[in-house]
Image (cartoon, rainbow, N blue to C red; front, side):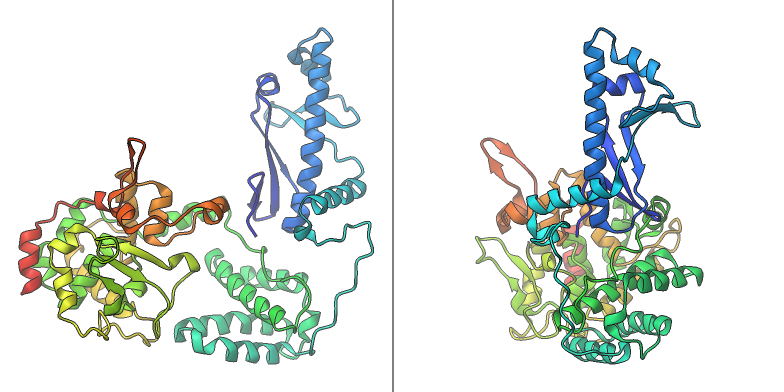
Length: 477
């Protein structure tokens, strides 16, 4: 479930955020109101926010009405400092800044009314029943399983479609919960408090926030499965406990993969340097440089996924999960990417033409490898990087850095975010894009869109100033 724009997630729960109207903001010297809600439940936070938004709106209205009686809003704010009205107060905080604080009033009544309003507006959010209506008791599960039995059934169900390494990680995440509650504990008795205690135990053991977020994701998937199977009838108890705080987000961004600058690209893809890579790994690296595709997506490509030009005259690469052993990270990862003109000039289509039509594009990238089809590609490139980038400033770099390089180079060339997302298989946070946008054609992805005299750019705007003639010779050798 997406977090609305008026809420922010913090380690302690959710916080309400609201913009102060301009006329009142000038008098208060404050543009934004923030209020900790002291709840980790998203739906409850939305309901509290509805109450607070209504009360702040009422406070703003009263200030304006007082201002209309002859005094300015500034005068009224000065007179009301430290006084408590029936729905709001104006006071100075510890730093001496003015703040306006809406009073919660009767929390229980206000919250129930807020939930009822949300239910009337969006019945699918809370269900057709409002808090004032009798709530039907949940149906008992189809069978009462112990946590151990539930985990075994889930592992059996996901085994065929999960990479061995991922399977081990998922199993460890659920096994950790078993250790917390006991393997014989009845699955239907699990509550959000049990999960909260489990995540807290992980934190107390020094498990990092990124690892706890990942474990939360896998546990959420486990409970999604047991709910769908009918073994658990409550809402998913595993989600929305652990989140990145601002400090963790900054640290994660700082320690993440670093994009290559143009000088580094030139060094890695110089003809003499590229000759150190196995021939197929050279093409895999060039695909990463000109498509931004993940190593796993490139490693699992079939020869049949390369279209030489019947797709509107533009050669393309199809990235999908339709073939045997092909898997994708998410639904939006399924896409068609145009082949950059530099790749055509380097002879990529000639390389494809000499391969068996029914085979794999990179046979050395084993589809059933423990770490996935991209494992060989990533390791080959990492060795290449260690040799030719050993004198560079220390940073986290690898094959994934090519993906970041493509995205940032497209951004610098003016490629629109929605276009970039479709090319590299990213999901935009705005849900309206998924609901209302159309897929760009291969030609538009490559060359941009021309409409009413207005032109945007596409993947073709990527330019690395590489010596293509010398590179083509090296690739043929």
